[in-house]
Length: 196
Length: 285
Image (cartoon, rainbow over all chains, first blue to last red; front, side, top):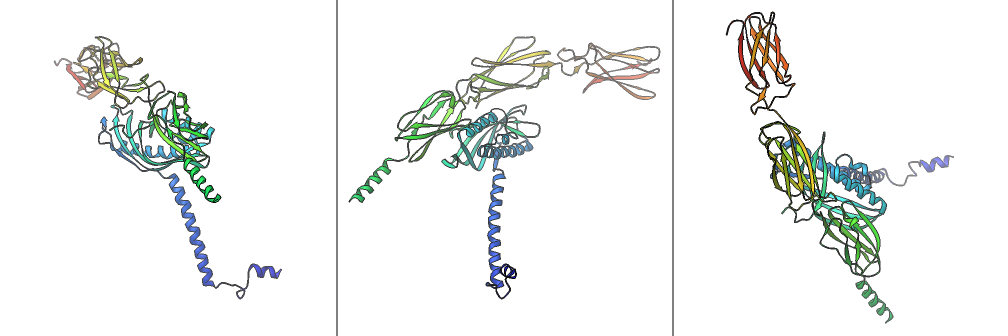
């Protein structure tokens, strides 16, 4: 019994490394753990963080945009892209409920349903959006925008990446106001020549 | 020698086994069947990934890959991907909306006062039969039919799928029908024009035993439309006891109120921001 204690808690004389060396080992392990944790934290923050969205409403018409409206559109469009990326990567249609409606939501729901059937899914690594608002209906009921999105698109079949592309993609966006937020009603990828 | 031959064969096979080349059309109309030509040989997995669609099936490389129109009903960017034994290759292409077939039409507001400039807003979104926004410019007609007077049409070219216009309300109250049309699609909406503010608001008074009965002339706006029943008219009397205000709704075109006045008083009338005439009762003219 005594031997067990000895082996588990060796006496000072039996201990190999000196206290200073143990301190170094302990600190190294601590630093490694901290590093791993920080990487994990960074990943979590990255997954949940909002994409960068910059709105340019210099050429909007016929209705001018109020500063608060511009702020809300920017915020809600960023939220919409965060949800879209997560919904498509995790095949979770519920994530589209907060910021998508109408045709945009229907199309994405259909895509997620077919992703589930085929085992293929899409992953976006979002590098930011340059949003240009050009139409704001006179009654304030609809806003049309053109988004130049910088992103990496990965198509995966199961865990295997079958396509990877880092590009600038243009989207024609229609947003409509709800009770407390702006919804993405239409999100259509358009060629780079569009709008020029 | 055998090793060298094996090495050369391997290099040759590796060179031949480059990833298959896919050549989709640059542009496809939504809902139209098409084919993608491919190079290479052997079996491959073909993927078609679009805005609302994901297709996966086996194909033979070196042959045309037929794609049904059902798989490209949503406009936008698609990726065709083929994965064979030697890796994957991909090619993007765009699906564009077909001919205009549907309209989404918004007309605001639902009620509007007569003769008000730029008070009516009409916005129409042009879609094809698969509900893709038609981005090429198309002509949208807004046909306006007032309750009285001749119908007229405003023609607008759509810009990036949207056609909109503003117009003044017409001088006569009643329903105004606006029909937005593009190709064979027509979307009607009705807007109710109501009388504007009262104009030339006038009152007259008659004395009873214990009070004064005040009554307006028929309340009309400046275009002669009857101001709707229920609109509030305020009567204010100032006499030796101070100021008294009575609100009365218009009923059958006129507003009435009975003011408990025994002595002389000055009575005025107002409706909204409009002030009418002022009269004096009690022997002082």
